[in-house]
Image (cartoon, rainbow, N blue to C red; front, side, top):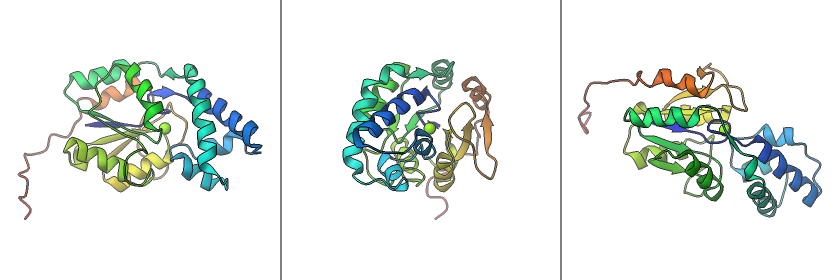
Length: 213
Ligand SMILES: [Mg+2]
């Protein structure tokens, strides 16, 4: 199965985030440039605030969320994303989303893709956020799947860390916002480049549940 990050992988929301962060700076009188915020993308919002040394994260998140919703028309799908996801679905792959974007803002973006997702994991559920493995492990539980049968596609080093800690394969989305970290992972240059993984699913020998006991 293919698990995917949302921002910087399926949709380009950088203009939305930049707009929302500007509103936060204006509203709360913060002198923190967008580049500092962007550096921590992939983590839950409260985690980013803590790393930037900003208090009152809940109030700021409300400003940020409202401004994001107002600017959501600036969101663009990366070219070829919908076609690629449809190709995986048609080949029988289960698709899932693991994102740090709250569900109310992620859901409309996912609906626009018109692709059936078997699970969507956001910070609204239980567990720690990325780079902890929790949301990926919870997605695997949703799908009744082993880590060895899943690949996570993300664009930030925290995505890579979460995949590593969850024991799933990782593919770095080279068209996204971040750089991969060591050890150098598999890299896809474009959404269409993901198609080369379509036929490379590991066909392992049938494994009888409980046979290790
Ligand atoms: Mg991302």
